[in-house]
Image (cartoon, rainbow, N blue to C red):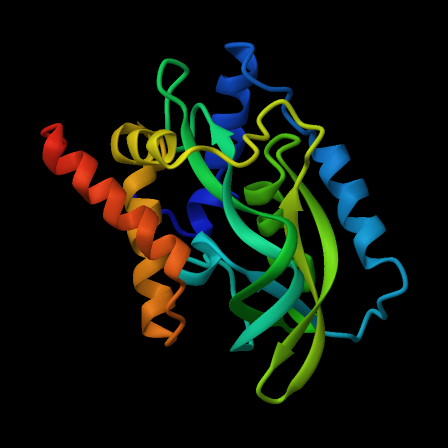
Length: 226
């Protein structure tokens, strides 16, 4: 499934959060909590200032929000990792999937998006609805190094205290999970393949993700997963 901004605006992620909460899988963030989180992040940002967003996973290949500019960039102090369990979005309670988050250490190449000041009130709430369904992520300011210089950007890093934090998993677990898990937003495997393909398009040959992708393909072939 490829979802767009209208799906988010119309409550797709809210619906997923309510279902997960009903099943006892996570505690859903409320609209009030998301609004408070957004206000904290924007404290000190002038009303006429544009805001940059750093994307490192599905935001790279399916941003689903309006932006005025996009640039490849690098951040330091964080690395991309399949360390967040998703029991509804890209998995099920019986076979939870995995999605990317930023975990401590290293560096990460991705895409910085500039949201114009005039669009902040419509676009940023969509991002918070998408990324803050529950307590898996924490919003954070990072320094993104682009070809045109450095920008201060908002991104979402893993909540290490959250129940869905997976930590560093063995390759065998990653391969099996990403090859087999599928949920309301699609499969974990498609999420991986799309991320690797977009990084390749940007000229970012990220070897760890390529190794994971190859292991997932091997697992799928061996186990008849397509």
